[in-house]
Structures are given as C-alpha cells and as structure tokens.
Amino acid sequence: MKKIFAVFGDPIEHSLSPVMHNAAFKALGMDCAYHAFRVSKENLEDAIKGAHAMGFGGLNLTVPLKEEALKIVEPDTIAAVMGAVNTVDLKDGIRGYNTDGIGAEKALVDAGVKIEGAKVLIVGAGGAARGIGFQLASDGADVTIANRTAERAIQLAEDVALVGNVRGCGLGQLDDLIASADVLINCTTLGMHPQVEATIATVKQMHAGLVVFDIVYNPLKTKLLMEAEKAGARTVSGVMMLIYQGAEAFRIWTGVEPPVEVMKEAVMGALRT
Picture (cartoon, rainbow, N blue to C red):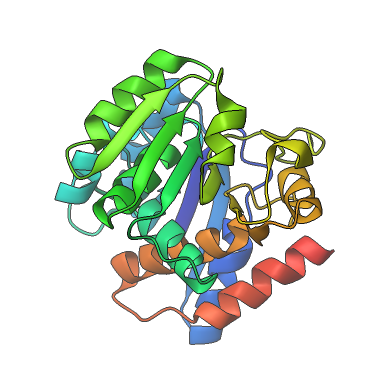
C-alpha cells in the first residue's frame, strides 16, 4: 500500500514540498506520495496523532506550527534544545526533529559564506529563526535576532545563548544593525506569495559587502533579494534551504540517500511556471 507523507501549515497553499518530495520518490521508484494539508495550531495535535494512527510515513511542519509541535512529539536532543520541530518521523512513535538549521547552514556554505566569526542578523523570532539561530551560533557566528516584538527576540536570544554568542532586540536600530552585519537573514513571512511587495529592508539600508538570505522561496526572487541586488549585495534564495532541509527530512523518514539534484530541479521548475 502506498505510504503517505505530508506537510502541515497555515497557510499552506504556497508550499512546494509536495513537488520536491514527490519528484524524489518517483526518481527512486518508491511507492510513496506527499501531500499538503492546512492545519491550524488548535488542530495540530489531532492532525499529528491522526497521521500516526493512519500509518503516515512522516510529516513536515511549517508556519505557525513548529514551536507548538514540541508539546506533542517526542523531540530529539537538537529539536528540544532549539525549541522547534519541522520534521516528524512516525515509524516508531511520534518523534520530532529540526532540519531548518542544517538547511540554512548548507545554503549559506554553498554561497561561499564562512559562518564562523560572521556577524549574522536574523529578522524574526519564530520557529525558523530559532532553528537557524541555534545552528549558526553553534557554528561560531555572532548572531543578533531582531523582531517587531523585542521581548520575543530577547527571549529567543537568551535561549540560543546556550550554544553561542547571541543578542536580541527590537527593530528600532535596524539600519545600524544591517550596516554592521555580514549576513542578513529574513526569517519572517514578509514577501511570501501573494504579498510579494513586502520586504524587511530596502536598497538604501543594505550594502555591497552584505550577504542577504531570504528563507521565503515563493516567489523565487523576493522583493528583499531584488533590493539586495540593487545594493550590490550577494543573495541566497530560500529555495536551497528548502531543498537541504527537505533532503535531511527524507533521510530521517526513509533511511535512503535523497536525490538532491532531482529535488532542486523539481522546485525550480515549479517556481518558473
């Protein structure tokens, strides 16, 4: 019988995870299918337990479910420390993992970024910011987390400080923070389809020595990345983080080495249409 995998989120219409994982299953000749489901935070526990009861192979979780899931699953050490779950394995109980940090790290390294010692500014304080903040701080980056609600950023920074050098603040000094940063990462949903004109920063705030990484991947080139290019900054698309975190989830669920190039081609093809 076909094994079912899924991504839960709210909203979820933008997700390209089904395109990516279904291409991987097809390439490997695996009798599996991956679907997207809109699930609210209030219904997350029922949805995860229902997927487990129905024999699903595994789940991905996206906005706004990553932190809520920690209350429901049995997290591994990394997910527990990070305080967010984006991957759920259902083979033996309900186990939670976080592959966001690995995905972001690989995307930045691919772009030629030396993470150790880099001054990284993360805008946003949700589940993705948590996962990425922990990963980059543990890799030796000097991390600042800025958020519209300063208290959330400060609390997250205190959590992440367990593994490295991190501070949290509001957005009042955003211009100065960007000016002194080596890497700017958008961990908010600003710029996501259909609100494609939204951006956390404009060309006037960025500089040529900056690397700008937007975890939003739909559209392929967000308003933030277009503004960054005008400033002469190097840009990193959220597509690569999507692919790398998805590849790690695939390994967790199946124990099989994922066809990363196939996954990348599927996502890029979908974004071009």
